[in-house]
Length: 546
Image 1 (cartoon, helix red, strand yellow):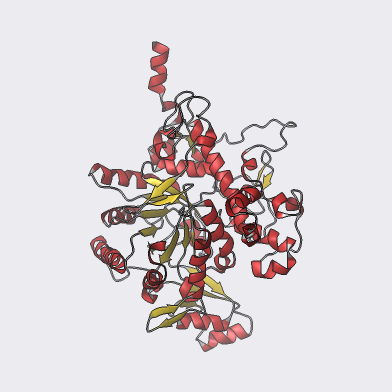
Image 2 (cartoon, rainbow, N blue to C red):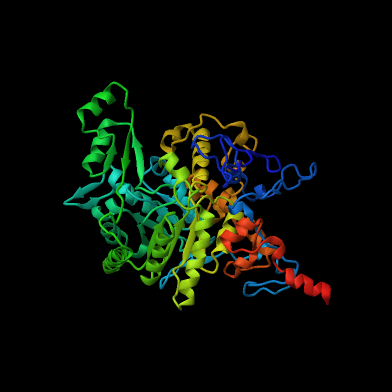
């Protein structure tokens, strides 16, 4: 197993726990006091693109060993001449072909296009309590930046205040809060996507959303995710709440209605309960049966009035991948999100997450191959989003290029949650009277933050960018977690612009697989991306032999 370095001396970053390929700790805590690269980027923004202590140091790359098949072993091409996709109104001169002029805007959709300022999609933030606690930071941040955010599964079912009558939702305060929070700052860029699993479908989430919000909401069907191959889970520590969830129709483990379980809970032998969702399509035994059921579901949603419908699938095998691509294409869906193993979770069985499914780079490589088969048959392939362990701008570049031209967005789950945690902790430390409402975990600013300042405008590099957007009077209503999100997104955007400029691509849509090469032969074989020294070798020899 590859051991990722725990510290990066050049950037001055350190992982609190064991790091994974994304650069995040395997266990990311909401109360963390730093300081991984994503944590620091939420404070310092694009400053984190560069080595620290300029003027007193020189820095050299430590990434020289490429073992195994993973995203780290795709490298990014650079070219020494030319410029492609220069935005309208600019020339191909050295004065115009500069990285700040790289256009990162993207869009997805079949008939109705959804625009995003940067090619980013959040992971599905559903019924896990950490998503609810920090939702305002996540949603306001996404709206201010202008990228789509996903309300995950089971939000209605776990809400004690929601009312389900005759099998249908009549009231859902938490789900409404999720949507309304995003729409408060929505300016036409990005989107709010509401995901449905088996229980959500039974409870009438789609009907409730279309009646309340019309075409302001995108509805998403869920087949799976990269972290697990069963339904979603949460953990509760109240016997009463566990019984409530059991009565709502969920699987609760251990069963809180059993007398022996209740007795064990009272004596402290059992301290918590896991709530599970159901597997889909269990009554079907063939791909054709799944197709028929899926097409019927899409037709029903369109009949309700949904103009934008998406699908999320996980790291199942090749048959399921082909089904997702083919069915989503045939149904003219607006986006298919493909989440590989190596991604994150709010609560999944740990050894399941470690050992099940197709790793992201393998899954994404086959996604491109299968999408190409459909395209060669003359089909308009559904727009794609690739995810599973992505957290940095170079990850975004690689995922977008690996699946080009079909991939429009890169999915980030845990990475985009860190700014929300960090901002809420800072806001609670500076304003103790707000700490409980914000779910802040700090009583005072730790040295890693205090070294940058004592107020929000001193601490967050993106503070005045947000103020310019919303106005000085409105800043008092913007949670610090959203400012942190904006700051982090600015770092991602600037880094992605720099990588694209180096590849001489000045519009995101011009990114191709030719902008990557493989660092070893195993990665070449899996991805179909040529090995480093094979790329343009013929052109090199023509120059030498001219």
